[in-house]
Length: 407
Figure 1 (cartoon, rainbow, N blue to C red):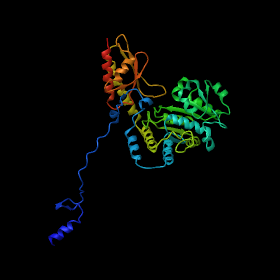
Figure 2: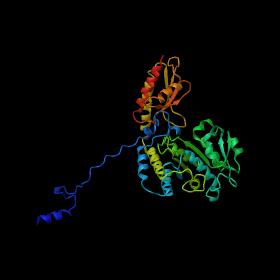
Figure 3: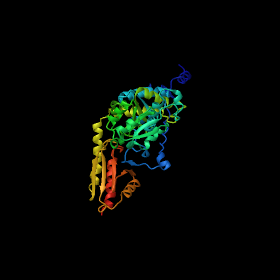
Figure 4: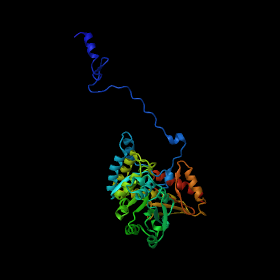
């Protein structure tokens, strides 16, 4: 074979075989050197936004929670494909309903949205004319019964639909209040102990008078049994926050309950228009992320998680108690946000610093730490939103500032 023929044949060989006279192992792939990955933007620093260690809890103003890694991965992966929102809601809703012992479920734009849509569904049923009419209640029921102790700002989720709040205190009051205009009986879970009618009796009254009952349990996903407790108890609708203890998307929530009411609520929700809930959009990423969050929460080792929280509290408590004049107590709230909660108090004669000044020093320190103020000279700390190891930082800073103020 002539040399020119060899060269000619080389020119048509795969590059993985020979290139410019050099032998390359069979099956290998030649490529240009990879360009260095661009540095990830830190928008908090770029925009001058203060970040902080969250020893306060799952407060909306503090961005609720940090999503679990599995949730973030789900959101990122599902952002790369198209899907019909109704199909995503159908499939995810069925899974969540099964996990929580409900007939049906749908992912909403937070717990507030769940309350609005649940109320709307109870008003309109499957009547599209009524759906398009809200908040004009002509020809519809128009009242929601609420206990006086539960009549807080969250009832505005109900009044968004146009209903009037009818306030009651006793069982006798409920008997007098129920009439042909009554659309729902609403229960605010964290206010439960403050009312004269407790949850089981509230459900029983709803059944007695044939009025749907709805409960707002917002951040009360702990203990995990709460996610099925109120469905099992017989509430017709249950509203849950997604971006708190469940550690799902902050702008997501769950409405679950009776099948016909969930179907009616969805007629009042996106992706349909011409309804009261059109602006309460929840995208496919959040719907799927919410499913993964609740699935993980229900299946996780709850006892192990609780032990982690107790250990974190102990680290902070032990550090604070080293300062003369400081006392601590650990409690668990009876209903809402049931996690180990640490209260640190001090004798102002021995630790000369006011509560607000103490909080400000921690907030403006480096790193910034946020916690809730308590009564008099005390602060309240929860640890379930801390990242691993942050309890040591919180403990150190608390000891430091209390020690500086010690007389």
